[in-house]
Image 1: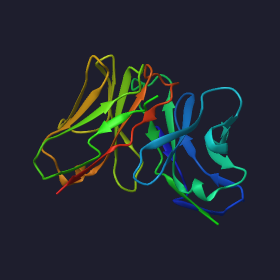
Image 2: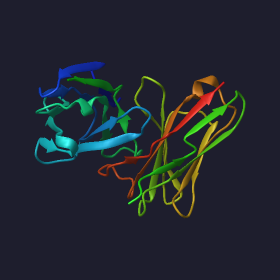
Image 3: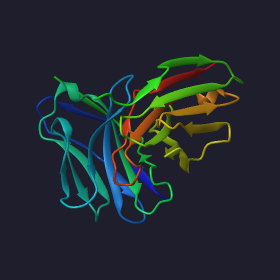
Image 4: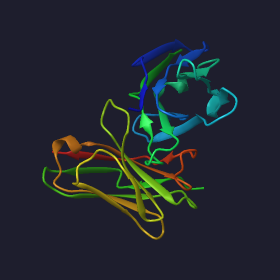
Length: 116
Length: 114
């Protein structure tokens, strides 16, 4: 079965420090991986995606993610956290060849708290 | 450009009632997907439509139905509401709905069933 795991319910980091939000996946076939952010009482905002090519993907608001096929991971990173980055982050995967071509499978989400 | 829009933003219903949620995709997008997000969990896929045809259906009961109109807007209908249907319902649009494409989400409709 296809699944996504975000092992940390919450990540705390001080402003200005680097941050990492972890994501691992389990799929058959090539994964298409996405990160979204959700602010309180809002929908999901797209941050970045990995389809193919360079394992380091750059996205919106200074975020980047590293795809690691051997470790089946797609961790979200940012070199210097801002208080305004505090939000709920979701990792998601879609698999080539699935009859559900538009179906995203989401992790449980990780709350990022950036303290001043 | 306008993003994905959803209406209403909030809704309160009682058990057994019926609800209709509406979604307008980004201009030029022909695929719409619906997700249910229960508090504390990630979104769960309900339906995908492309060119007015159902492309996929998640593990939801037949009380849930949807349709897509010629202008690519969509409705999600839920009959015989249960307390467990209380959730944020998210609509997402993409160009053709393929695996490679980004899905862009609307702000959601928050449904409370009493």
